Figure (cartoon, rainbow, N blue to C red):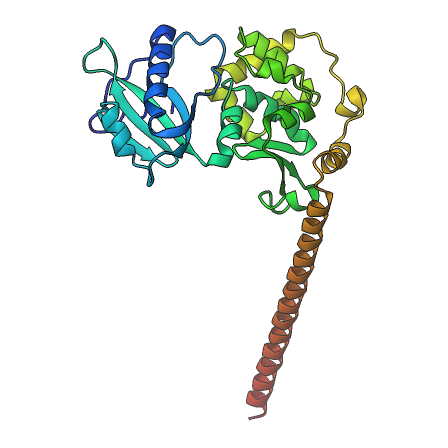
Length: 317
């Protein structure tokens, strides 16, 4: 939430940004305290070169006591105020050494099976926004539940149903995208190092980031996310890469990646069944539409016949 959850409203709280030393000290402190409530507690790998921090993010899973009660955590951390946006809970915790000021702690409660992927997907700040722009033209989407393959035939009419789950195993995803898992597992020293990592994705193509080809979400990120803007406006123009069409660059096409993904993740049967079901539903829908249209046309003809008969009867009378 960027550290602004408590700074608005009728009774706003002061939540000044934290320098790295304060941030890391509190992060360790909150981690120790939350371990008493959850079996799994971790923070995503930080974005590089952050001079200050607006809030502290911790992911948790497997509550030691059920049902989970945020009030008990708020009491243990001496929180002034709590905001609940399940599965995220924001706590205003006293800022050490600054009376009347607070630190925003965001606790995201994950399902046990989703914890590792959520941690993976939230790491390195804007990294997955950047990678997402690379893989999107090839029919791949990484969101907060895993890596998905979009089925072109279905996507034209129903994007949600077009999403076929591939995996939520971080190392498997990195391997498929051609990204080094060792580099990913530790913080990047600089923003430029993170940009270089983005470009090492085997689906990276400079033209995917050309402004006229950006999707609406990417254009919003350009306006709201400074790192995303920096990558497109500053980093890419200076990088000496051949600007070629995707097919000319590596022979990769969306069709080829679609087939590769089906083989690699063993999803062919599942996807083919979904396509078959979709076609059957579409054909049934079209059949019903045609039947409704026929009935409508017949009713119009019947009405026209009736009107003509009435007019004829009136004229004879």
